[in-house]
Image (cartoon, rainbow, N blue to C red; front, top):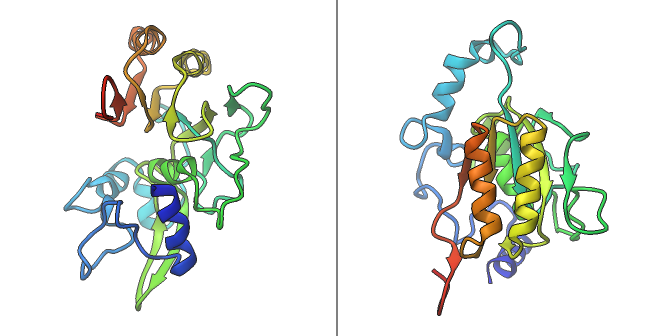
Length: 224
């Protein structure tokens, strides 16, 4: 399975791509931040326009009409020692909806702090500054799509498989209560239940952008 491959791959060579993950061609000149560049998302260019301070090596400060976008990251939780945890990670408002849990920290004993689905997706979403180096290629920079967003982590599952629409609905209610502008979720699971439908409709009714992975749900027969 993917998690097993992840662990085996990390033991063998921690900085290699997993075969199941998208990655650039072997000779691509930007092996570490290809997902941000001109040929893909253009997000790095967007930073320089929205946050011109970074072109001078400064961290943007919000003032006046410009404010941080606030994102609820619904996933499997994170680890606080994740080296690319967002600059504006809101630990106080982060919350687990798994019964009897008081922390969003993923309790699995990962081989290194990059591991775990929640760590990976929060890094791509709003990852902090990090230095990558391999085969004489070096990248020093931000990893996430919007590295200056305020992000709260909401843990609703111990794995990437979403089995409870009720917990998702609770998480969406909480994100709305905390004034989030965006909800980001990349999980697979059952076909939409009434609870999941209610959650999506609530987000829409409150003007919250709900961004999800698509095509990963199960109906009758094989996963689809």
